[in-house]
Length: 371
Image 1 (tube, rainbow, N blue to C red):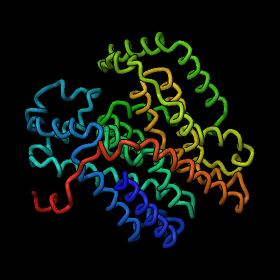
Image 2 (spheres, one colour):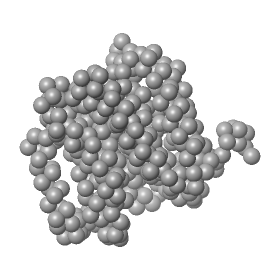
Image 3 (tube, helix red, strand yellow):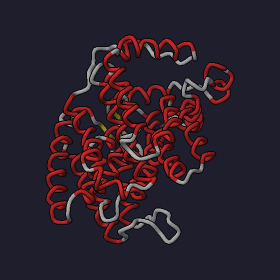
């Protein structure tokens, strides 16, 4: 785990350097400013992700790449073009395979694309003066390590980071175009089509309705989810029942971590509400949706519902520093942030106990020159 801790420490240090160079992180036109520290941080994170040869399901994606059909063969099969079968991802894989047989280039290209978009999002939505804290949370809550697994989903999630600014600005055409692109990479991303319904104040009637619906599903889990699976199957999206009713339940400790921001946003609502602009409302509601899926994951299907929760967890990452800054006076906020860092670091260490046994990589020299 020392290698992961080192990457985390270097990234947080570079994030701190970036926030010192440019506290807002934006240029005069309101765009993310890529200072030298920010670029170096993206490089460090990209290399760690892109040089891997083994972690989680990485081997499955390597084998999928090696066995990918040429583009024309891929396009000639109508089943490959089914919008519910992740056609864009497999088309990109097929195109890469036609251009090269080097799977290291394939993994590195996705690592670069995804990391740049995630870093850009974090820099844009980190509260001023809290970028280093946000990057720490990005690692601690598990988004960084998840970026080395579930390649379809993490790429779709990266594309969706481009959709959030469009949603904030009510640019509906751009928003739904990006949601469609993400959905063609990974079907679950289509769920973002409903996010505009939750762009109002958190913990209003829509949030309470969502919470009530979640509790109702939890109480009737097998019947309700079974009906949803039957409907999805009739639409052409087959989800095997064993993926949902697999007996795997989400660890309550992990659910508690995902509950931190939603609970704080409810408890400190009177202090937060005056500053809840459209951007903050969307991000806070994302954190609440993330928790709702984690609650379902406690019942069964931890893998599936946990992955759905991951789509929305960046809302928690970007809003926790803001909540602490608004809910406490500056002196108390610093102490609370320190305690938060200690607690989240403890979760990070707990969550990645077996990382060293699961992560394998080549060196940068081997990537550049072979070996």
